[in-house]
Length: 111
Length: 114
Image 1 (tube, each protein chain N blue to C red):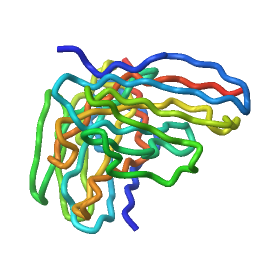
Image 2: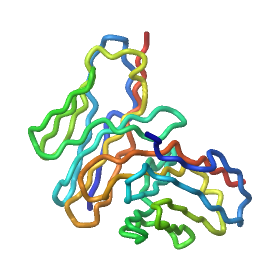
Image 3: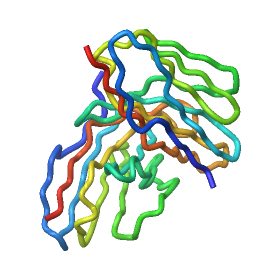
Image 4: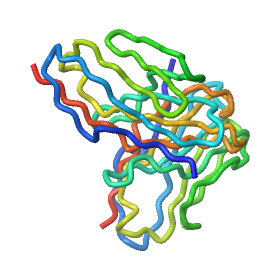
C-alpha cells in the first residue's frame, strides 16, 4: 500500500538554528514527490517537485533532496516567518494520479 | 492571475442536512481535486475531476459526491451530514492532473456540523 510518513510531528527551532524535516515514502513507482507549506487557515502552498533520486531543489532558505525511500527538507538559518506546517506528498506511477499526503511537520521558529 | 477560489469560506450545518461547496480553478486548469483536512487524519483525498469526468475517487462513503462543469468549475456535495464531517475542505487545481506538477490549492471551506 502506498504510504507517506513525516517526522518529526512538530519541531521548535531558534532563529538561525538549521534543521531537516523527513518524508519517508512507500509507493509503487514514483511519479513525483511534492513539498508544500501550509499556514494556519490557508490552503497548502506548493514549494517543490522532485522526480528522481539524487535530485535537489532550492528556494531561499529551503532545500529539498530525494532518495529512493525518503526526502528531506533542509531549512538553513530559519526565520520566524518560516513557521508553518510542511507537507509532503507523493504521486504514484500507477495510472490513478492520486496524491498521497503525509500528516505534516509543524515548524515553529522562535525569535 | 486569480488563484483557486472556494466558496463559502465558513459554513455551519446541522447533522442530517446536506451541503454544497464550490470551487473555481485557475483559468486554464482542467483538473480539480478535493481533499478533506482534519487535525487527526491530515489531508485525505476525496476525488479528482478532469474535463467533467471523475477520474479518481478516495475511500469516502457515497454521501460524498462531486461534479465538474464545462468551464472546469467544480462542486462537491455531502448529504446526511454527520458530526465527523466537520473539517476543512480544500480544492486544488492543475492543468492536466497527470503531468507531475504540484497543485494550486484554494483557502478551503471550513465546515462545522453541529
